[in-house]
Amino acid sequence: EDQVTQSPEALRLQEGESSSLNCSYTVSGLRGLFWYRQDPGKGPEFLFTLYSAGEEKEKERLKATLTKKESFLHITAPKPEDSATYLCAVQQSGGGADGLTFGKGTHLIIQP
Amino acid sequence: NAGVTQTPKFQVLKTGQSMTLQCAQDMNHNSMYWYRQDPGMGLRLIYYSASEGTTDKGEVPNGYNVSRLNKREFSLRLESAAPSQTSVYFCASSEAAGVNEKLFFGSGTQLSVL
Image (cartoon, rainbow over all chains, first blue to last red; front, side, top):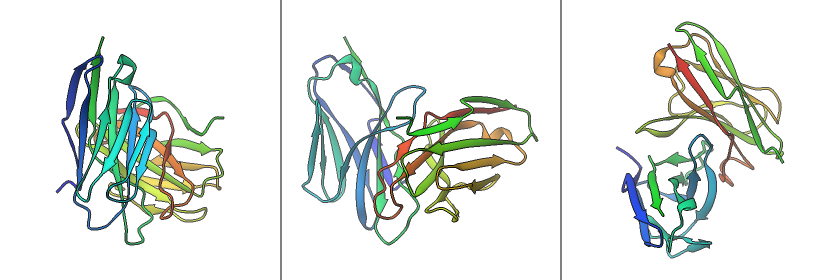
């Protein structure tokens, strides 16, 4: 059973068309939820960390929000350069020091 | 500012061959990780090193070994490569495992095993 589920798998938008990506998680205790951006042929690049329900973080056209069961990455008036795969990951509480558990990602395409 | 450097970037092996993937970070991070990324599977943890001198298995350790050579370097070895190990491998580092898991990734090694 997946602990981190991202939807949709792929999303195609027109430039300027705002939308949201979803990340739902089922871990028993959440220490942190992370959003990464990954461009083709490159490693993931850190965007945000969220720690508690109600928290929001913003960067340029991106805003990440967190509830007790899911996180949203809102993209406002996107541009073609926002095209990438967006990865969500969680860090569980409980003392484990074994990195993050990742979702499969949402492949976002912004058409001019 | 190099961050996390991985070598090689591409590699083709025949079944049964061995190789070592190299990773080095220059951010003075304590923790280092090896992930593999396969289509439709997401990133999966192979091994990690919470601090210099320690290594632990992740989700998919079979067929791999690791060495934390010093604080900067963490290598991944395939002793007898199999086609199932065809994947993109990413090394990552973080300031302190279990405390701050913000990961910094290298650019990846694309490995094909024929």
